[in-house]
Image (tube, rainbow, N blue to C red; front, side, top):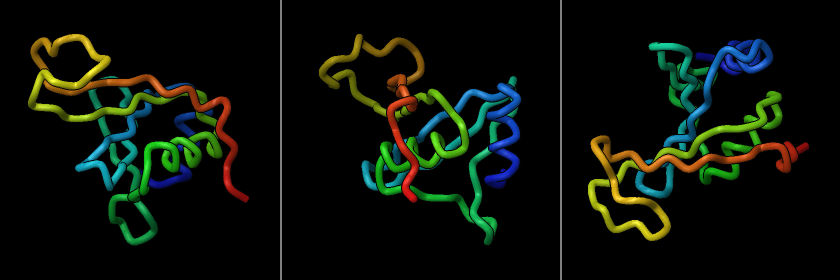
Length: 104
């Protein structure tokens, strides 16, 4: 999915946004609409990467998004501040994007 397609989905309110944390140094954006999932791609067709969840959130805020969920994959039940993992090992933390301002 390209930036303009994601912006259209955000404006139409048709998707749920996820910021995927990978190894703590790479963050990807995924749009979920019903059963379909699509990663945000750059102009070369490669996954668009961000250096932090805040950078990804700021980008999404610039497209008009108001909220997202940061998804950390965790195989262990040792993360402070989260309830014990039941079933799926993903830790999901809501992120309010309303206070983030896009970089100019």
